[in-house]
Image 1: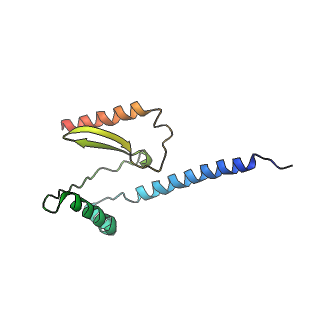
Image 2: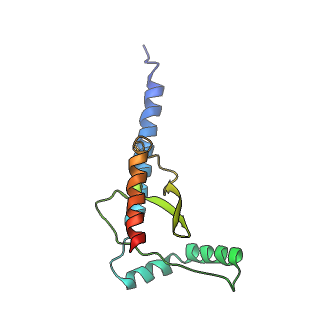
Image 3: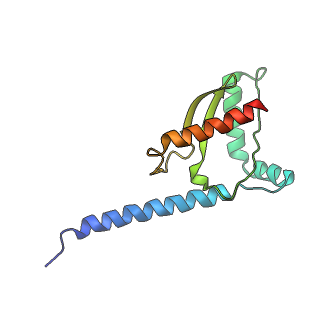
Amino acid sequence: QLNTNSDQDDQAFSSLRNDQICRSFYRSIIKSLCVRSGQSAIELLCRSYQRVFTDLNMAMLKQGEENLKLFCVIRKWCHAIDPLYEFRLFVRDYEATALTQYHKHIVLRNAKQYRSIIQQSILQKFDAIKKN
């Protein structure tokens, strides 16, 4: 006799496996962006020519060539933090306006449960940086 749950089990396993593959893929890509010197950073930007070119063109179209303001954010790489737990804090006039997870295709299962703790931690760090 056939087990009628096997299709559901296969789908659940496939979904879990796809999630693990997706997470591993993202982690690998993110870790490949870690550089150890200014020269390596410039080389990475040059190898990312198409993305950099597209981003700069979009900024120029929105702001106009005369008003174009560019900023380059460089941050210390922290190997202790899972790169999937990266968040973006949007700031305007030195005030936090929005907070979101960076990788929209990955569901952080515990993020909703720990939302207030995550938010408080990020905002405390932002306030400490703002004071300096």
